[in-house]
Amino acid sequence: MKKWINIFSTVVIVMIANTILLAQSAWIQSEAKKRDKTDLTHTLLDFDSTGYFVLRFDKKFGYAELEKYSQKLEASQTYQVTKERRKYRGVINIEGKMYLVFFRYKVNKDKQIYDKVSLYASRINSETMELEGQDSIELIAPFKMESNYYRGNFTVSPDKSKILVYDYEEAGDIEGVSGLTNKITLRVFDTSLKQLWKRTVDMSPTGTAKRMVAIKQLRMNSKGEVAILTDVFRKDRTYLTRKVTADPTLFFVGKEANNFARFTPSLGEYFYNQMGFSFDEEGNVSWFGFYSKSRYYYQGGLFFIKINAERTKVLVKKQHAFGEDLLKEILGRKKVKPTAEIRSYKKVHWQITKDGGLVITAEQQPPGNISFKSHGVLVVRFDAKGEIVWARHVYKYGEQPKKQRPFLSHYMVMYQYEVYLLFNRGIYADGYATVVRIDKEGDIKERKLQRYNTQQELLCPKLAYSVGKGNIFVCLQDRYFNYYRFGKINLPELFKPKKAK
Image (cartoon, rainbow, N blue to C red; front, side, top):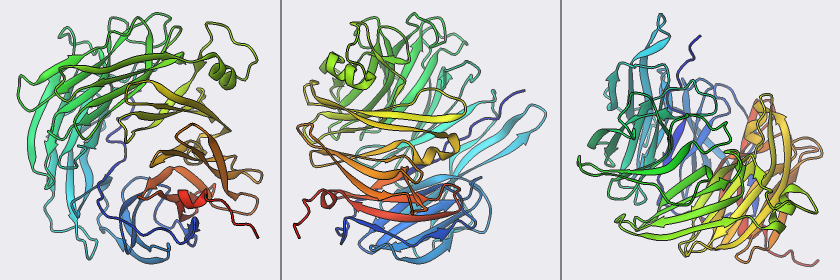
C-alpha cells in the first residue's frame, strides 16, 4: 500500500520590523476561548504598537481566520479570511503585505498519487482581512508527479529581501532516511512575489538514477544564493549500520548555471548527525552538528565551522568532544567510560550571537512509537572562534502520548547575552510551566510561570514567538484542544529581584 505524499509541511514566514511596547507585567494572559471552527494550529502573523494578529486554521487547513488582540491581550476582532475552503499552507508577511499560501491538486486514485500539484499565494486585504481579487500568484506551476512522496518549504534571506520556495520528490521507503532525492527545484522571488530565477539542480555524486542525497535544510543569503545542507551517501543508504555511510555536504547554488559548488569538511571518519547552519548578515555561513564514534544516533561531541561569504576561506573549524563532567551529569553516573557518549539528542533551536558565536539547544528524545519522550535539554554556547564558552544540561523529564506533543519540547530565545528556555515540567496537577535563564557566564536561574493544579490551559512551547525586547508571545491550550488562550512574557522583568515587603 503506497503512502500518501506529504505536501508542504505547515510553514510561516514572518518578517517584522515593528517595535512593541514593554508589557506592563512579566506574565499576562488573554481570556480563554472555545476552539470552534479552528484547531490546535496557529501562527502569530504580525504585531505592532496596537496589538497582535493571530492566524488560526482548522485541522485539515481548509478554514482560516484572523484574530486581533490588544497589547494587553484583550480580544477585539475576528475575521474569516475567506469563505472558500482551500488547502492552506501558511502565510508570507513581508514589507506590510500579507499573502495566504495554498496548494491545489487532483487525486489520482488508481495510482494513489496527486496530479497537477501547484502552489499559489493570494494577498490579504489589510483592512477587511479578506483575500483580494480573484487572481492568485502562481509560485509552483502545475506538474505531474513521478513518485508518491513530495516535499517543499519556504525560507527567507537574512535581509528579508528575497524568498525561496523549493520542492522535490523523494524516495521515502527507506527506514530512518528522509528527504532522499537527487534533484531539487529552487525558485527565488522578490518581496512582490515576482520570480527572479528558477533552477533544478542534480546533486548526485555520480549522476546515477539511484537517489543518494538526503536533504537536511535550505537557507538563502541576501544575494539570493541558496545553500543546501545534505548527507551524500557513499553506497549504503542507511543510518542503521555500525559503519559510516554518508558525508555531510553543503551545496551552494546561484542563478547562473556555473554558480554551483559543494563543500565537504575534512573532520575525520565519524558519524555526523543533527546538523544545522545559518547565514549571518555579512553572508558568512555558520555550520554545526554532532558527531559520534559509535552510531548515527549517538553524540560524542560537536563541530563548528564558519565559511566566509565568498566561500574562499574556512574561518573557523573546531571539533570538541564532550568532557567527562558533562557526560556524568547527562548520563546520571558517577563514573563514565572513556568511550561513553550520549544518545538520541535532536537539535531544536540555534541562533548566531551578537559577537559572531553560536548558541544551540538539543533535546533528548528517545525513539518510541506510542509516547513522546523528552528527558533533558543540552545548551551549548560557542564564541566567534569556535571555542565552547559553556555547555549546560537542563533536566526536563516528560513522557506522554504523542498527541500531547505541543506541550512537550521547549522554546529558546536570546535577549542581549542571556539564553532563555521555556518549557513544562509535567502537564498534570503536579506539573508547572517554567523559564530557565542562562547568563553569559553559564550561571542558571529558574522562575516558575504557573502550576497546573487549577490551570486548565497548558503552555505550548512549540507555539511560541519572540516579539522583541525580551518579550515572548505564547499559546496555551487545554489537554483536549477544546479551549485556548494567549499569553505574553517579559523575560527580563520575570527575573528581576523581588522587592522586600
